[in-house]
Length: 282
Image: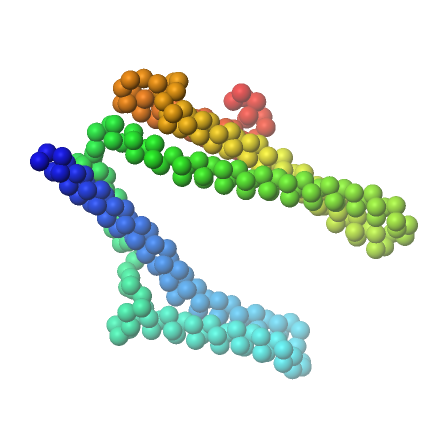
């Protein structure tokens, strides 16, 4: 009888924690939606007024003694009219009780943030009250690692592609500078082309030196490979996870993986620092 009771209790604990996470995620999404609603409600009339001021400014500056071109009238007038309709529709959704499309109408973002803080506090208290034993948490931690390794590899591929794109642009632009210089003798249009290519080479070189996509890709891939190596060793029961007690292996595995992740975060922070700061850290 004890085992079914424990299973039922564990299921109830999991369901309760999942419900709290869903509530927190829903509140975060509601805050994002409310920000967009408030931005549209107060930003649309300001944009309409700005459009009318631009229209009037153009009329005074360029066409004071003549008729404004119909294209300008159509674009600016149509834009102001469209913004006016958009503001009217948003005002109706915000202040009219007959429409329930906006879930948090007449609710400030401050109130939603307070609800989010309370929901997070309830989740922390509930998780603390229903905290499973360490061996269960370590086993759950191990099961989350495939997602973490996939994230690291995905980010590594992203930075590798950015690095390759920068390098190819740098190669093409550098080669094009020499080709254009050799092909064109007159200053134009080669001068403008050379200026653009030289700007591209300088920009890519500066961006590659600042963001360091190659180093980031290497660090992420190295961390993912190290975590996978430890996970494989744990699954196979080989050193250093060949102890007779499963709890000891789980504790050592979690400690090792967290050390690898901490080392990855430290290397990311070093890459974000200026060159002089990196030398001081090293």
